[in-house]
Image (cartoon, rainbow, N blue to C red):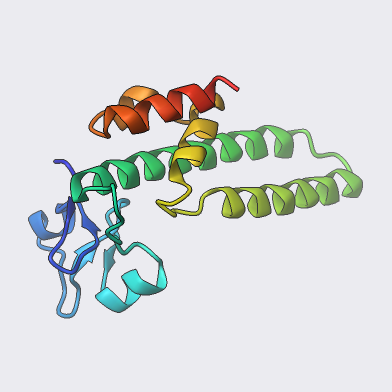
Length: 154
């Protein structure tokens, strides 16, 4: 099922509703299937804001692509941590892993900011880093797709 903009103006994929998991006060689910109230969605910054030049459908496509890339970045980080943790043999290596994780957290939290005003730049960097494919952005206007493709080549 393709995620949709819910009645509260934020994304839902309908999984919780189909599975009967919606509890009183819950208005939708995140892209990972976690049920959220409207207040939770506001706190988590998953609201969809209409901007000039972006349709609701394009915003949905952008959010889904963003979430996929974020998931891939986290999966890549988990694999790296698993590999590095297997080689731990001293306290210095433990602290080095801690420092690595701190830097990665700062980098990921700073990079993955869902702001449609800057999203094309982010998508270009994600394409360049193989965390996103251009075809996952299909449905955006040709102008937006060409900008992402061009910026990804730099």
